[in-house]
Image (cartoon, rainbow, N blue to C red):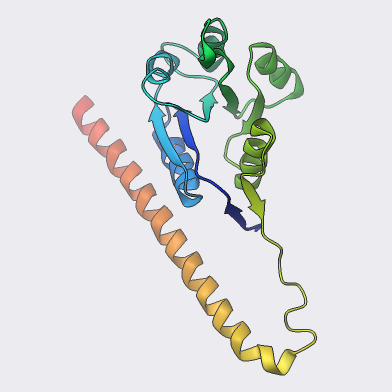
Length: 191
């Protein structure tokens, strides 16, 4: 998996009605030092963009009350500077004709769900016209020239990477557990 570093933190508005997707997107953005604010529909987007200075919006396509394309068209119809805020569509419906429709509605780009982290980060770079996320080069020949000298330090680095990976997986699983608890609470309140 490609590693990235972040040159500067972004303030990102996330419009997503699915709780699991919210948690995944938030965890992804926070991992790279960004500040995500989550809303659940297009109506909330229109209210929220006046409350803070966002670098961009990640906009789900299908949401209750007001869809992503409807909210985008409303934003583009504004007469102030917010009419030009960058908007990336988030959708599982990413066939070429769908993407062309999102762009026609005023969205700047499209990222697919489930989230492909590398694609999302490079899409953010593209719409901002800035290399916010930098792919880190892999040290391919770290053991080839100095195998004996590097074996111990390589093992330590591998162990540290394993620790980070384990911590990331545990953090993600804890978030999933939280989503499962939310679902169970919702089921109980409806019955």
